[in-house]
Image 1 (cartoon, rainbow, N blue to C red):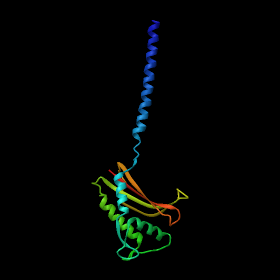
Image 2: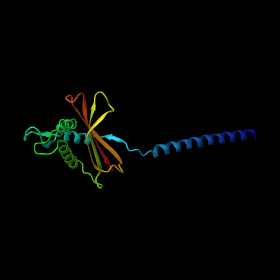
Image 3: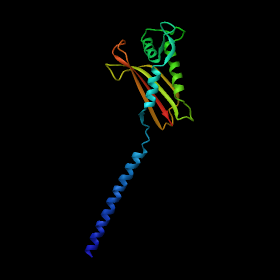
Image 4: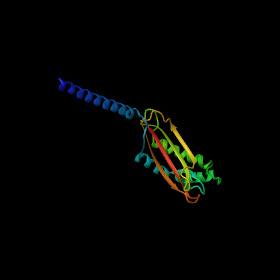
Length: 180
């Protein structure tokens, strides 16, 4: 009879160990699966769209009429405008407003934004960052279309514009797209 009692104790101990490991596993899985944080991914498609848009010709000429500026050049001119060196397009209008209008037209035609579309929204931020500080970002422009809600993923891309004539630093362009 002693051998029988000993094997029953071993069996109860084994069941308790299996039960504890199962509970720990369930808790771990609920924590892992319960975390529904949307991840940001870099997209080659978005990066290429952003890169191509930087070299698109705008409707703004600054020095003389046949010399229409690229979007990248307008970003630089808009940054100069914000730092006090105000310039306007020869056809009339502010450089920064022309930049916003041209950039919005390019992105709206390149990314179809609607509730029925794959792309639900986009946000583009353009800012200057000094080489001295990585935390101090000086916003140049910011544009949005759509609402960043119910995104299954957020994809994006970036573009750097080196600018040594404004001091040492760079202009960073970041485009994020909400996909549903």
